[in-house]
Length: 227
Length: 325
Image (cartoon, rainbow over all chains, first blue to last red; front, side):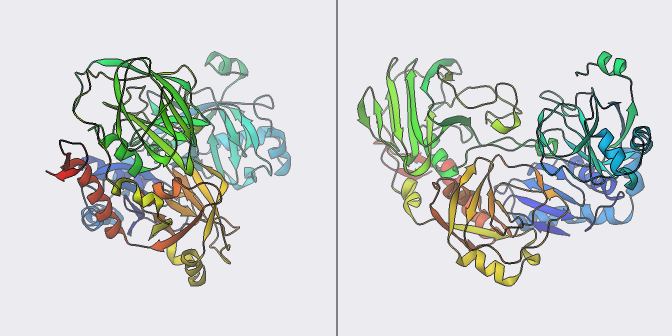
């Protein structure tokens, strides 16, 4: 379903609820649109269940833009979810120093869920996560879904200053804060990897898969992590 | 008329006022990295500032919030000032807004406090040649990128080089500013969760007068009016655009503007047209605005005409009128 979202955007809907099969499908449509190098397409913004297409309304009107995109979307609903997985989806490993020193909410998350700290870490590193969307801040990837046994609500009062690299959980989502920012997610560790810089922009892309790998304090510091 | 490609020293900021930032038409193709678009809030005023100088449509200008801006010319240059009415002087002598204006080296330009509206645009022939981020000179303060902030005293704003005064000064026709004096009625294009709002709430949206609140910045303006009785619950986060109206649980709409986030989870009944975003952005806290429904094709036609006028008209010899090519 393709809808107008204002005078310079279209929103393509792929479903109504969060579904781990959607990021690959949405990424496939993204790739197909990118491959055509349409001069009127300005940006493609994937999210959980949607793809927003920003376009130049001076170059093309809404009816023609919809007509051009419709076959590209229809094509995907049938065949090539598997193609997308084969073609594009990257697996990125992010090292994390899980500790109370770098994860001020680690003990709380464990206690809330009746687990030991070790079990929280084991479960957070056990799964491979989908990157559903980039947003909130430059390079901030919304990932999910974490195991229900380590899910936890956001903080009632967000922190005014979350350190760069902080790894957090909010409900069944997980993410790494690329830069110092305010934030309400429960923090369980810190990642030394640079997730956003002005030259390379966002390391993560919607449709990527991510696995967290536990590292020691020494490894964290050696990889440029700060305490 | 473009300069010779060389850079001249341009202006030195003496006092930026409450807040002044460099803006062009914003960044393109970067929203999927979580970066905001940025860009001038008031497309019409900024375009006229550039049109008075025959600048590139995307030339960077200074967006001044509430006025109180002073700068010194470091080299001969030609500037124009548009937007909210204010007293403007050069070396203490009053000059007109909505006109092109020559400055000699050492001249001091002073823009007084904005009356009735919020944003003043200062353009320079050739455009300000300040640092680019992601292919645009627009400054998005909230992302905290190194050096990407509002203007400070002593900042130097280089411009495309410029030789000597040529021809008569240009004077913008009344159509350039008359729209700003009209009661603000904002065209709203239905979209996003339009169908999930209650009919009574949708009617309320276009029959209520909303007051612009104090909590208004380049990310968005909060509006206060009769709250919607029963807005839909939060949604799965999706891409959002500047102009979108989001309605949180308290039923009071927030109009998102140029620096808004890239995705969001509040329901949205529609999107304000790009030109009317400027009309909203010009309103001071307490000012009242209304919405009226429009459709995408009308909004696109209106915008296309506006852009065509910019590109397809030329100034008359005496600088007092524009003619279609």
